[in-house]
Length: 148
Ligand SMILES: *[C@@H]1O[C@H](CO)[C@@H](O)[C@H](O)[C@H]1NC(C)=O
Ligand SMILES: *[C@@H]1O[C@H](CO)[C@@H](O)[C@H](O)[C@H]1NC(C)=O
Image (cartoon, rainbow, N blue to C red):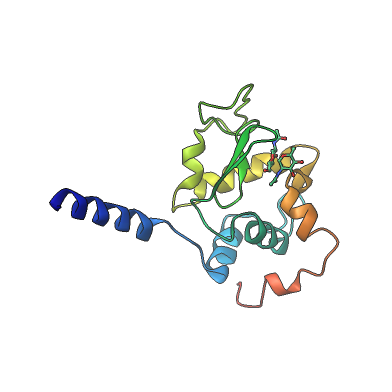
């Protein structure tokens, strides 16, 4: 019983720790990190992308059984090309990080890796979520004038 209670508390604290960014805080953090206009990608594109990819959840993990790779974190960065999760065949790890680094509350490393992704010729089109939900749309709802 005591063990169960301890386990329950551990699970609870793990749940509480998972950081889900609030829209405005994320926009500010991205802006401070030089993401607005990075390789021509506007802040609104980043906010739109992260909303549709992860709903701003830093611990989002989604395995795709079709292509047998996994997307990690707030940007849903893929394990075949960008990070190493030790279980994706043919992984390249172009960001040079373990995929778990993309799940931290502090998104500094996730931002660095997202910048690496858009430095490739395909740019932000690398993200299916961006193509499906943000490309050629009015994105004004994604950033307000609260970003200084
Ligand atoms: C696999 O699918 C995910 C979407 O679930 C996508 O983000 C990723 O880029 C794809 N990876 C490859 C190597 O096609
Ligand atoms: C999984 O990957 C395939 C191939 O890359 C892609 O067509 C499909 O959209 C992905 N599924 C999801 C849920 O993203």
